Structure formats: C-alpha cells, structure tokens
Length: 335
Image (tube, rainbow, N blue to C red; front, side, top):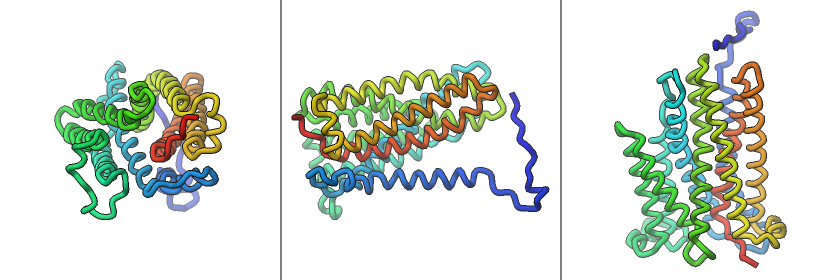
C-alpha cells in the first residue's frame, strides 16, 4: 500500500509553505502544559466546599507522581509494542528512537523527589538539611521509595545497554513498589488493594505507552502494510487492557467508597470529585479508541484511524496527570 500526497499549493500562491507538523507540535505542547497544570492547580478546586484541608505540597507531589506514572508507561509500552512488531511477518526492521533512557531519567528524578518527601515525614522539605536519608531505611514507605529510585536507575542503565529488554525487571519492581505504597498495612485488606493496583498500573502502562509507541512506529512505517497491521494487533490487545483497567478501577473505588455512599462521596469529597473527572476522561478515551478501531476495520484506508488514535493518546496523557492528582488527595473515610 502506497500513500500519495496532493501537490502543495504553496507554489501556486507564492506563499512560503508552513512547516509540516508545526501546528500539531504547538497543540501537543499546549496540552502537555495543561496536563502539568492539572496536578498543580487541581487540589484547591477539588477541595472547595468539602471541608477537607489541603495538605502542604499536594500540587508538587501530584506532579511528581504524574511524571513517575508517565515514566513507567513509556518504556513498558516500547517493550510491549516491539514484541508485537516482532510477531508480524515481513515487518520492517526500522524502529523509532527509544525514549526509554529519557523516561528513566525523568522517573528517577520524580522518584527521588517523592523519596525526599517521605524522608521528611511526608512533608515537603524546605531545605536539604530537612531530609533524613537514613530514616528511609527504617520505615516501609522509605524502603519502597528507595526501591523506586533504584528501579528507575537500573532501568536507565539497562535501556542504554546492549540488552534493553532487561529493563522490564527493574520496571516491574517499581510497579510492585508503587502498588504496595498505595496501600499501607493499616488499610482494610491491603494485599487485595495492592493486587488490584498492580494489575491496574501494569495494564494502564501497557495501554498508554503502547499506543504512543505504536503511533510512532506507524509513522516510521508509513507506506507499508505492516503499519496498519501493527495498529490492528495493538487494538485487539488494548481492548483487553481497557477491560482490565476498568474492572480493577471499579473494584478499587468500591473498596475505598462503599456502594451505599459512593454517589455522595463522588460529589462531596475531593477524592471523589477527581475520581469522577478521571472516569469521564476514561470514558472519552474509550470512545476515541472505539472510533479508531471502527475506522481501522471498516475504512478503505486503515490509516484514517490515526487521528482518533492520536487524540486518544493525548487524552490518556491528561488521564495520567489526573491520576497523579488522585494519589495525592486524602482517601475518603469509610462510612
């Protein structure tokens, strides 16, 4: 399958052609900035009228957590889609440049920032002198924070080595540490909660990072039949990932907000409000995914599925930012 472009009108009108992709780049940068503002500005509107006090540094912690989630998604998605690509007969050997080393660096910085918060008693440090590094080894949260820092460091080293596939091991350790951190031992049935978070975070990372890398690969394979085939293969797996993310998300919400009070807490608590926003965003993402899949299977040109798929990956980036905010807000009290 070959693709042709219509002749440019720049020569006829005498105007200078606009650089291809400039508008898209600006739009993506604007959306990235807006996504970064969600965790920074989100706590105050979410807490308004709930009677809950905003903890110091909530915005910064939410931003660090969002960066950590994104840093997990990028390399996990690259490994996932590369595995799918190898299963395609006649797939071109050309691949986009890996972003895994940069993601590992960003994740390392975010994990280091979160570890500094744990080292000061879950408070934002005012100076380096406030950070008790030795205290990290004396608490469960501190050990998990150190595991995440070392996990991203090891993942970065693996990503730049001759065997980048080995980074799945430290990345898996980071996911496990994050799942355990999200459910302290004082919580009701923490192991069940950690198991749900483990599946949720793994599937979400595969979904978000996989779609990003699939679209990048599709652009590199433009003009070949392998590109649409890869996107179709990813779409089939993504349907299962979406189901798993939805199921684990619902179960986790019901554990923290019992069915009898969930409607009230969705509007009366900061956690519930942000969770409701996340649900709406995920529903929109699911609609975009369905639209892309319909185009992929029914349109004469399968590449018409790319615009809704690009919108889907941008929307997923916003979901990641909202998820970072969600983890920084106080969990509602079980009534």
